[in-house]
Length: 222
Ligand code: MP5
Image 1: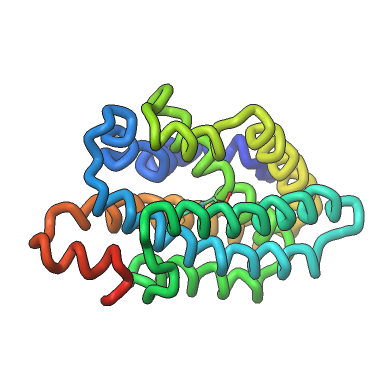
Image 2 (image 1 turned 180 degrees about the vertical axis):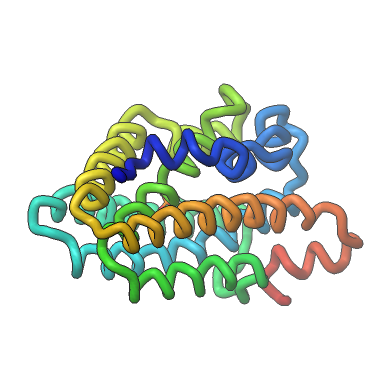
């Protein structure tokens, strides 16, 4: 039995839909997301990307040389992205030196655990993480500022091409993988879909708490 990224998407449409379609994104699209919700997402996503950097490095350590180019390109984009997050946080007067919320912590711990898994699982996970944002930020349609800048970052044609490269490499790795490894890759795909859904929900729920609590969180004083 073969396994490809496309097959994973076809086999689990509901899990993927929940990972990429969320009221948080719809409310960015309609411009009514609350600043507190958006800022929570921004700070927590920065903390997430710090750990994602490590997952890329671990994937690179296991990758065949033919896959270095795409992964190094991804790492260099992440470096630029971390600086961009810092600029966005400064503009919004946010403290990035914050604690991870539980959902972010769970996602980071899961990414850390992928370090122990075979390369085809790592390649599938990296593709799924990048494809999730590539779709999530595009699906609602054109966003108003200030959200357009965020939507364009992950929805641009260049980013879409990069995600296709990751898919091609994950497919290649899966083709040579054992049945057990393919099984692990499928579980990783489902776990990531579920964590993506939780991550949107974490930020979305921020607007529902009492004012004081939410303000403290976005300032990173939790
Ligand atoms: C990405 C992200 C995409 N920033 N946050 C989550 C929760 N999932 C996926 O990663 P990158 O490095 O920003 O493209």
